[in-house]
Image (cartoon, rainbow, N blue to C red; front, side):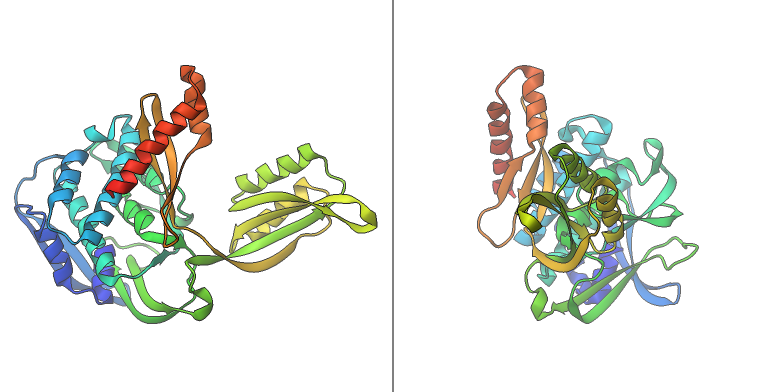
Length: 378
């Protein structure tokens, strides 16, 4: 559906066909057809597998992508997407990523989806923003038996990605789709500040009970006040002059647990010279009421200020690296502001250091070195 929406938007189908042909997959045909998604005219993209396919490991797929004659941009994106997908599958099944296998037809579908989507995004050369992803509920049958929805690998691919309850049963976001969006999207907003130029619709096969089964892609020009790669968020603040440090710390933890993007306390001098605190939080638009309720419930404040602000953020992702002592999540922040910022998660490093009786700095240094090598390799 991602590829169908981008081709419907205006990316030439030949971009997808050339990228898939570069993989040299035998017995695979591609087909773009017009289809209706409810009352909406859309494009549907079908992958027709005409002969038996081998099982492919993540390593074999990564090596195939590394040597395929793709454009540099498409290759780098496709490898990042497949790494995210492979790491999620490895964690679900408790095995090293090198042993992850993509089964027969599923491997071909995933290859075509990932490479085709990466080629489309690279062809457009546009920065990508996505809305929070709608997740269905229930169960789905897979190669590994019946699994709950959202699928375990989908959840892990969506680390750091905002999601919402779609309110219906069924799989609305697959692991492959989750990995694509998580890697290519710089930010997640309900709607970016753009002047739309064109729109494309990618149709799915299933009929949903209460909405079109379609994915929409919109191309637009950023408005002047939204040129920075940021997003609109709500700023919440409350002044208190009678709160203990322990209660303030608990309030900050409650804000973060309720979904705050960030939360802090800053010392101030209040009326009559009394020392006090300003408790602040950043919230996604739509979450202000829930976080305001936390501030009013957990602190002694009599009121909460709200303001709409814009923040500029580095595109960031979390990747797992395998040290000698265990896996460590590493936050990688990129963007056009110099070299990437790479930071191993402190708590994970500290836990491994305690478990193995070694210095924390030793675990952190090795995790940082592995992550930097991965960044250099694309």
